[in-house]
Each structure stands twice: as structure tokens, then as C-alpha cells.
Length: 429
Image 1 (cartoon, rainbow, N blue to C red):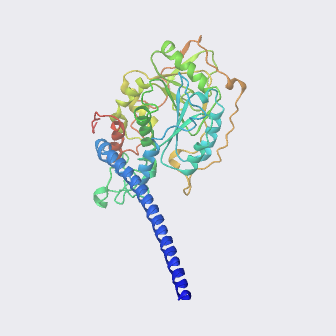
Image 2 (image 1 turned 90 degrees about the vertical axis):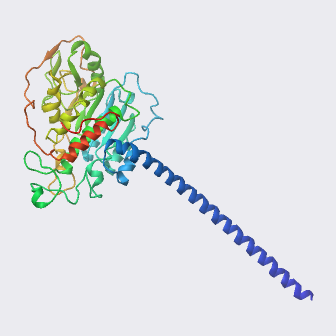
Image 3 (image 1 turned 180 degrees about the vertical axis):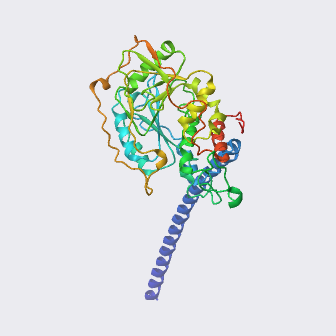
């Protein structure tokens, strides 16, 4: 009997051990599943809450296109705080925010970031980089910036963001192309004044600029209460070390030296000019290289949303020169120094794209000499102002280069103007 009971006891002990192990494993599995499920539910709840609050209220109110997954992710990214707050916790009281708007020319962006790193006073301010869509190489370049606070924003309604969605603002399946006759082809779209239908990569230039302006001035927590000047530069602008200090001086002098000036510029409106070298300030027509203005001027521009959005030209700057500025009723002057602090160096136009057959490409190398004088302020408060009148360039009466005839683009443009406001902008001119 004793030999029989001992194995029975061993078997019972082994059975209890196995049961204990199984129960423990089951408990662990249940715990893991519970944690995973709760985390998934929390994430799902956040997504649902965010989508509901944004898509059902703001989206309906603004009339913006239904967002795809990438567009929603970029919208969230835009709400993140600036980087490098640990390195630069405070902005200077009189800082001038810098907005760098970029497309997909990494060889250019690398150079302009390098020049910005050498700008005296850059650590005192906030740099906002506005992307026309999302391009990983461009994103990585900006993430490497360590010389100031930097915030990235991404245009969530860029045609580049909707290329895989087969929907507007990218190409829709039923879109007219080229000079298609909509009635004969049974396709969608409105041709421009020259009979050409929209090209997403072309219209994205004007869309990005207008979305950026409305977002920076009226949407971002970091700038929507900013009343001072904001400087706007592009990825193919070479910025000299004295640019920021020169701009601060120009802004401080503008109200006294040129009260009728709308803006302050780092460079002449003639992109081929390096300045006159005079001992005087210069007031001239507003240029598109290194331009800055304050909220008062933005309000005047914003009120002209209809003029901007319905002018048949895909270039934002030509639209401003030919229709918006003339609508102000008086000459639009900008104040600058007699020696440039920024140079346009790009050889490839934005409309020529990247990574396509026959696309314009260069290595981003430039031969711009930075002299000792370009490292110190070259603007003097005691100088008088020389005013250029009747300068050549685009003016009222120019009918535009086209590319902006589709009613959907015009409506999207108007929706950008109202997306941060409760009041409405009339949908027709």
C-alpha cells in the first residue's frame, strides 16, 4: 500500500503544479489583452473624438475637403509645440518671427538652413517652416535644426497629400485634362482664360502660400496673437548674417521714415539687383524676397480674399501685384536698405517639380560671396529715404498667366480665408 500511495501523491502534486502554471499563464494573457485593448480603445477614442470635433464642426463650417489619413496626421502635427524649447526657452521681447515656406527641393533647403544658422540674432526668435505637403527628406533637414526654436507646419490640403486618394485637391478620376472640352468628354473642371484645365502641381503654389498666411496669422497658437512683423522667406533665398539685425532696424524706422510703407524687405524687388550702395534708405514696390509686414497689413490683405482667389494666375506674387495691392487704392511701398541682405539663388522653378522626367535639377551650389560688411548691420537710422516711383513690373490691368480657372480651386482658396474665422467670405466675386 505504501508503494502505491507515494506515486498517487506525486501525481496529485504534479497536477496541482500544472494547474497553477496554467492559471498563472491565463492570468498573464488576460492582463496583456486587457492592457492592449484598453490602450487601443483609448487611442481609438482619441481618434474618434478628434475626428468628430474637427470633421463635423470645423470642417463643415469651413467647407474644406474631406481629409484622408495623411491629411489628418499632418493637421495633428501642426498642433505640436516648437522644438528646441530646452535650448531656447524664451523668445526676445521684440523678436520678429521668421516663416520659411518650402516645397520639395532639399538641395535648396539644406543651403538656406545653413545660411540661417549664421544669422546674427537667430537664436532669439521662432522659425516656422511651412511645407507644401510632406516629404521625408525635407522633414529630416528641418528636424536637424538646433540654432533656434523651430516649428514645422504641413499644408494638410496640399494636392501632394491627396495623390493616393484620387480626389480633389489632387487629380480626380473624372477631371478634365489639358484643353479637354468638358461637354464632349463628360469630365469635370473649369478651364482658365486660355482654355487649359487645372494642374494640381501648379495650383499647389498659390494654395500653399494662402493657406500658410491664414494659418500663421490666424491659426497657430504661437503667432495668432502676434501683432509685430513676420518675415517670410523661401527655400531658395540665401540669407546674409546681418539680415535679422537689419530687419529689426528697418521695422523700428518704418513708421517714422516711411509711414506709407506697408512692409520692410531684405532685398530689392529686382531679384538681379544687389542694391545701390547709397547712404540712404529705399522705398519701392514690394518684392517677393525676404518681405515682412505686421497684422494690420495682413488684415488688409485678408479682406481682399475674393480678389486673390478669383484672379486667374497660379502665382501668388503676381496675383498680389496685379489685383490685391492695386485694390488698396494707393501705392504699396516697402522699406529696405541700400545693400541686400538676401539673394534669390534658385535655378529651378517650383512648377517644374522634382523626380520627374525632364524635371529641372541642379546641385544647389551657389557662388554668393559673404563679405565682412554683410556680417554687421548696414542700415543707419540717420539716413533719408529715396522713393522709387513708377517702377516696371506687374500692375493692375494684367490679366494673369492662367492656371487658376477651376471653381474648386477658387472655392478652396476662399475656404482657407474663412477657416479660422466665424464670419463668412462671400463665395463669389
